[in-house]
Length: 444
Image: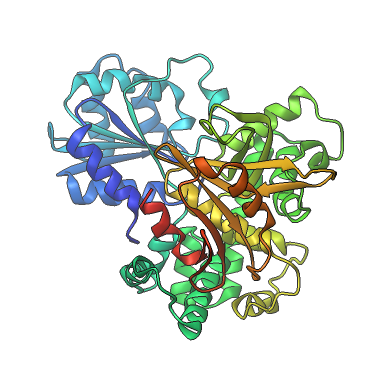
């Protein structure tokens, strides 16, 4: 199994919270939740039982007909599974818990009983529909599981991120040839992404055709899920519109453009379902970044990114049914003709989200102009803010972050321009290659 940070989060749960809370691994489908849960159970408990509610036998389903009598429930679940449970030494995994809302409601009583431990996993797609008539348990310790981040990807491919971390901490240029090599490594991650099956295909088959096939299968799976909720296909249309809306350089996601019609309340509900699926990331436009970013965010002005940049890359070139190998070759050589700054922007959004931070950006009108300035990302750091501007190549032009630094100079902690270029600066503006962003985030 790949080394995952969510595994470490489960270790913390077991050490600190497991007596009072079940662990709930949340995330999109195919990000590795079930694998992480089962591997953790194997390594940290004497025995475990895994119940997959997406593929449950009639006999096991009948066990849950009556959970009120816990003594009998535990005897029946051991009889059907063929596994003995040991008090304080065993864990029960409820996989795809969103499909069994009444079992999720019972977590409160199972945890209070105290005999065993519990891990839940859920993609949360359509979870709101499934929990209308139940009481959501407060006894859940939630752990967000994202696609593999860049450090996890590096470890999986046999590279050590500590070298990058040390290079970052020097604050000095790494040199043109080294920087080119490190950027090429990052572009491999952009092409493959962090879905464990795609990473496995890259490592074991070393073929972008196989990687792309896996990613297309995942996208197809997502769209099947979307169609179960909305047979009209509107959720799929919203999902597929993310790359095109980012490429249009608009300062917000426009639902009506994605659907080709005026937005209705039903469309807003479907957009909420898309967000619940965890397949996308939402970045809010904060209207006054001189105060709390969350308190001044606009609920009507936001950008949408895909939660995995590898899927973004495939969706971006999804016009062809078969993989276009030239696309991957050109991406590796940084020779794609289109201005793909938004591809790097999606990567930065994924990196920030994987660090556990919320996504915000800021726009404001230029004087005597219908155009706007835009700061791609803003992060709070103590009582200050840190602005990020993302470029795919040139760092010569950075009017937005320059004007922002003038407007909010007393509120800025540090300011960064992220690109493919080596370490440098323009007065107080720090230039950093994008592969150093995870280490910038570590220090916040």
